[in-house]
Image 1 (cartoon, rainbow, N blue to C red):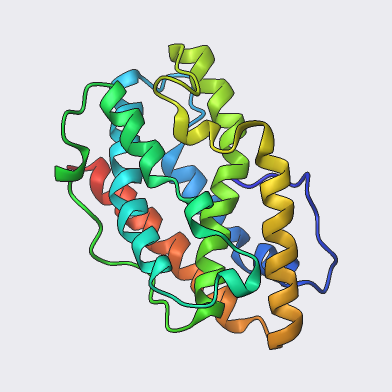
Image 2: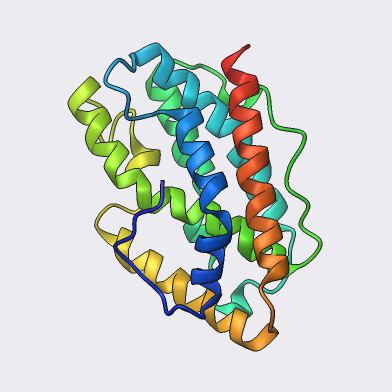
Length: 202
């Protein structure tokens, strides 16, 4: 769900994250297959239900980690669970908060791991621009009905990604090796994929 349009320098934290997690990113994309031409509206809604069940607790876990504002990250401005909730309600799900929630989240022992986790969620927002065009063509869903989540930041998507890139790279320079960031990102990719696969069978 990440695009290659916005690159970072080869030695940056962002470049390290992208390189080390590409295989899990690809595995998640393959598991979701949101661009499949045969994707139906019921399957699309089921995907959104699974996403909400992951994003809601994951965003709460990220918010419990201190240090974001000091690193120029406004988590409230980047939250997506409310967009998913609105999409689900507009698609006929009466009580999104009663849906199953993921109980096995990526461990976040520190801010470095949390930055890695946020990399996954922010990358999904970047890639969501492609998916939003697909679901509008497929179902007629838009940023005001059914596809708020995938439209994400809308015209500000590039700006928000660049802001995140600067923050994650600056944090990586100040705090040295990127191992804990990478571990957080890998764990988030894996738990997200496993959760979506589990919900697909429900």
